Length: 115
Image (tube, rainbow, N blue to C red; front, side):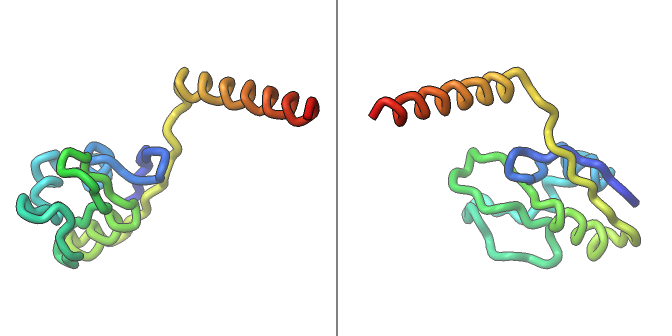
C-alpha cells in the first residue's frame, strides 16, 4: 500500500494523517497509540503506535512517518507500506512570514552598510 500524507513543518503526522495512512478510524488510532494518562511519554512499546515526545499533556499526538509505516507493517500486517510525505500547502501566513523575513533581511543589510 502506498500513502501520500501531509505532515507538519517538522515532518510529523497528525492523528488525522495517521488515520488516513492506516485506513482506520480515529478511535482505532487512539487505541493503537502508546499513551498513558499517568505518564506523558511512556517508554517505547513495539506493539503500539509510538507518538513523538510531548512536553504538555495538551500537546497533540504526532507521529513520525517511519513509525506509522513500521506499525502498519509489523503490527497490522500490511505487506507493502510506503508513506510519501508531502509538505503542507502554502498558506497566506507562510507568504506573509516570508515577506516579513525578506524585509528584515533588507533592513539588516542597510544597517550593516551604515555602520
